[in-house]
Amino acid sequence: MRVVAVMNYKGGVGKTTLTANLGAVAASRGLRVLLLDLDPQTNLTFSFFSIDDWHERLADNRTIKQWYGAEMPGRDIPLPQLVVSPERVNDVLYGTGGRLDLISSHLGLIDIDLELAALLGGTTTLDGSKRRFLDLHGCLRQALEDSFFAEYDLVLIDCAPNFGLVTKTAIVASERILVPAKADYLSTLGLDYLVGNCTGLVQQFNDFVHHKGGGREHEPIEPDFLGVVFTMVQIYSQQLTAAQHRYFEEVQANSQVPVLKSHIRNSTKHFGDAGESGVPAMLRTTGRDEVVREFDELADEVLGALSLSGNRR
Ligand SMILES: Nc1ncnc2c1ncn2[C@@H]1O[C@H](COP(=O)(O)OP(=O)(O)OP(=O)(O)O)[C@@H](O)[C@H]1O
Ligand SMILES: [Mg+2]
Image (cartoon, rainbow, N blue to C red):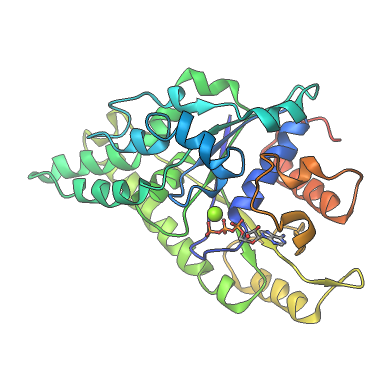
């Protein structure tokens, strides 16, 4: 099982669209994929379930909010109990051997994130607070170690555009970090800050693990940046615009995060709706158009980096 966090502080850069479609393409290649929606906006969840369905079947007792919302995450409800199989997308995947499952988010997760952060301060001894830091930040990582999750090839985590405690648990749980970004100044501005914050978190976590007694239940972590993938790229006459090309090169030259070879173009035709159909665009599009080809290339690159082979369509 490989765990990848999809994150960027910048909102609206295509994280959720990329998570849903990359997950769908990986599943269509015969892989068993679990998507984990950690954003209180709940957009990934609503790409697979209608709002009515979510209210009826999930909202009260089967979302990640109930899991993080316990006194210590997972104390009230085990993570495997939250896994659901969205029907419409799995109907489309029938016959591929692949599967796409989901852990749903909840709009109320925003309050839980703040409450969790408050728990960090709740101990009186230095050793106690280190222990609490590790238990809180390492909670998702520990939960994903349950043998239930070993049946998945790939877990993709859609993070909120912030560096709150819930996002930090995703970083600690992940082996790789994928960073969608638009090729413009504001979207790439935060990249080095993101790297700095992730590095700081990893250092602190590992320091505490190595501190005497700290590492009994926690192992050191080593999440690695898979790379930046440019999304909503403007293509005219089959070419990148000169400005975007410059940006790709600039980020490649100056950022500490590698830039992936593949990118995803801007296409309101494919990504313009709000996901009402319950099936990501890449599984709805008939024929191999340019966007399908780009997502296939991205899947080749990402799955290749994770040493996950699937059956290419
Ligand atoms: N390649 C694309 N071409 C055109 N529109 C896109 C593309 N990718 C995403 N979009 C649209 O852009 C908007 C933002 O995308 P998305 O929700 O995936 O971003 P996000 O980074 O997850 O946002 P947030 O930070 O709010 O979670 C959505 O309306 C989505 O449909
Ligand atoms: Mg999103």
